[in-house]
Image (cartoon, rainbow, N blue to C red; front, side):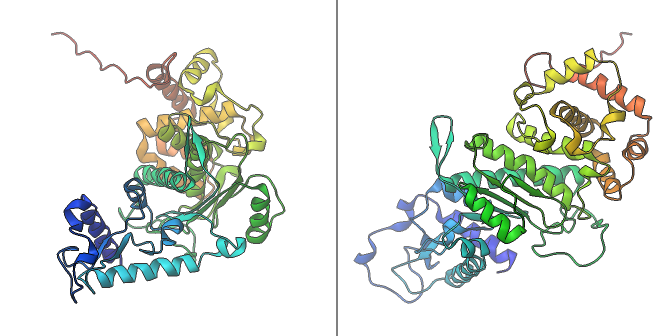
Length: 420
């Protein structure tokens, strides 16, 4: 189905989501069927599918395909069922085409074939997501797994949107690919990406191990993350990832790692020359979306299990004010996996400073890191200052922007105009 056709169907669905009392009219059995359209469906030939709650329909608008919706018998994932009072309408053909598109997508999904059972998954603009779990707690409430999956989808796409704004992606100017050769399977809309990010969450560690062996040819039973070419992240449910907020944050954090590793050139530079950028960005987008950051870029490289409850501004301000020695020379030479959580927090703050003061440098610095240029050279060329002066400016900004107690950044006071 063409993009314009998909958009038309979405607009049609919105139109039909008006209060049903205005649309449905008298019971279907009270009228005879006609050949082309009727008053009940306004000659469209289709009506909103009654199997989907309004809250879910709002979430479904954010994804391209959803396996739970695709298995709906009345509408086949189109969210529109045939009007039972007429034979055909102006939208019947387009809806039938959409149902076929959804059915073909569902049939081609290999994970359900491997499991031998339905596996809840969605496809978005940049991600292929699986959440194979039961309801997850959010405070005192238990949220059904279908809703949880869509919440996660919203989060990871928000990362892609924010990153796209920072890097000016999405068709604003020509693509700047570094790598040669054809793009890989699952090409996304922005031509700067090579593939869609695969992210899986499993209720059972046995299922996690099974897909690791079948699809990734790995015997690992722990959390798994492969970055760069065809990124994939797989995680089994455990104590630290058992509630909906925890799951949303771990997906958000790792989505940033995956997207950055697949941009321009299929290369993860966290273990070469750009650990500060890799760690800083992953924590920054998690923090931005959820108001705190509780994950670790490389878990086995992190000794501390917690750092100030995941809210870092006051802690970073106090540390930078207390310790006079330079941080950047050491930070920019560390791999992501070498850093403990306090150092990752410093990288987050440095990235935070760049976003606030030099956002136009994020793209050229990322492109340079993909070419494995030393970070010291990249920072000097893009910020136009020595490393010493860059650190001074970063520290000064933190001192006037970060709070001393509550985790809410303060806006610097405007300079007073001199009296005449």
